Length: 277
Image 1 (cartoon, helix red, strand yellow):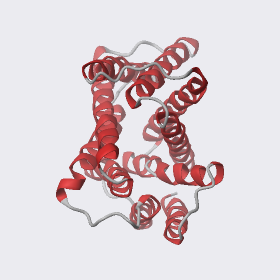
Image 2 (cartoon, one colour):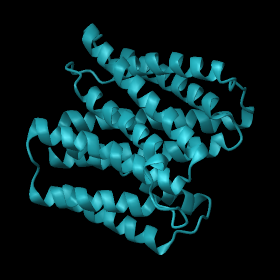
Image 3 (cartoon, one colour):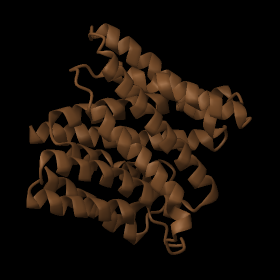
């Protein structure tokens, strides 16, 4: 059980981190909203086909509604994150969002499922410290309430997504996630339309956008598997290690130099994984 949740949670982090990397590279030359819409549409197609192939029973309306609300929360978090990244330094936005998005389901899990073991609690602390060190920019100014409002909003949206999608009672995985995309795509289109940000991306970037959509779905599916397999707080903490994957991919593929602080953060994340699992 512990091994399964560890594997599912870490694979979710791997997918989300790689998806953020792919989407981030794609948005450098394309509008953020159109990348988000296309990647979500790709996800909707894949999830629907998967649900049909695996012959999942259509869940009750309450589960589909939970999926839709979870999708709206996650979508709102994504828009808040993108807006925060456009007006604030990434070194402030990234760590606050990642830590807060993990803290909310962690607290919820402790309340509903009881306290985890002492070693797991220490692992949580190492995970928070590691994510902060990895994504924190040394040139960023000190934290101020005004600067962290949007990152906190983004983290709240992501954290609520993690909680709500775990409340789905049916054994199926794909149909509830279809509900998330059915809610986020129209919302994104409306925001993009009124924000006049509906632009067509260059065809050479479409494969990267499609990859981002596939990886996002992979992260969602494996997170749901982790949450269904074991404790919500453990699943959320492990999946929230995704910034480490994004930073390491930038180091390997874009030759971005990692600072000593970031290497310490990577070590802290590895220690966290060992303690939690």
